[in-house]
Length: 582
Image (cartoon, rainbow, N blue to C red):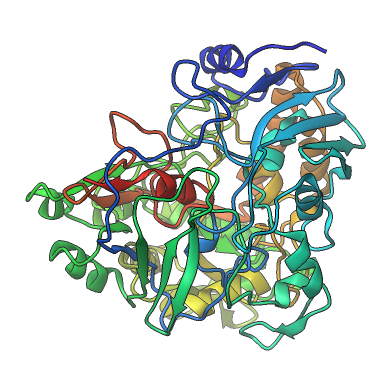
């Protein structure tokens, strides 16, 4: 084994612009923060304890339906993701630094990347008083709902050590194992493995995803659910939290049905923490009460249900229609008018421009076209056998292409982008009808696959490497047939399933050789640029506002210790453990 402190390895990773390729044979380390901080120390808050209730915008989830089950991603409430359930480590996607130890303290790979050993934090309790052990971690990775396809087995060698084994080298899955899986209590969740129910579309659900976990959810995180209603839910500090009892005694998450209504409450001081699109952030921050961070990291795209073989229906299943729509979009205008120039250009390769440039293959477009090209869009359609009707719309067999483009009601940036795309598509001879739906309908549609086009986001990677996007959003192992709801950790809403992409992503997962990974990524990128199962629009602004007058300890430009959105899984839990009264 090669042993060493993770701090040195991550500094080398920063120089190489990737933290993945240096997960070299047998590397081990403890996750340190700052300049050699103690990995066993809690993420303690610095500041005063306060009884002032922290009010958080829960998003457009009205009415609020109590659901704190992290295995039900379409409906789970924000507090569950970090505030109640925690991962082993929290990775910071806005700073190139070691991950923060949470339920895990250190890890070690064997020489060939087929075994990962994780040392756990001692003395942690679930909020019902039961001890947290390695068996809970094993269960969280191996239960039928959560087990990832690349994991062969997980075993507890003692109460504070878990050994994960893989069929092949799995260095590239380090973040997925350590940073994106929430740990749940075996003694609670194992009682609900045979539950049954329905999703919002009436589709049958079985197993852990069918359980709402609505009453007294048991977690290790800094907060415990107190009350729930259709308008809000509240939480109280967990007095036995391993990081020390939080300094904020209580939280209130309020559901508001539109960005504008939430912005109005924010501007009048009635919300303390919100991540939302605000066209004029200076209006909110002018008084000095609120701090502000804009952290563009996540692509905004058009989700297309692209794969007929997986049950998708609609003209968007024709790659020619997707290619034409991609060329019809004027991204510069969308950024200007829908995102008021707060967004950034997106790469159709899904490498984050400026951070991941080294991974963009030769011959691949680094940046999606910023201006529309209706003539090129028309040529693609005509070459594919489409003709214009009397109204100027392309179609076949006397039937014009007509696509429904939905976005959640009240998400003003998405709603405005959808209306612009409707207009721009018309100029290219494509009929796109922009509409709004409830947030619940939106979640149901994207997880069931029963849609044509949706404006949506892709979760950007927490490390300087697009691998996680390629695997989670574009491989067949991370999708289901239309009508079968995607499970926990499955984000391939397009139902895209290309064997060459699947194989290339698998190749990348088995190596820490940068040249081999680049070759595999070239295959992936060629197909994504050609097939467009998601049509990239922009890297969206992620605007977070926080009350800096009454509370301290927030992520700031000077101390960006965590990605700051109130809804972010799982970094919002880290933030909740650090903030305190001023």
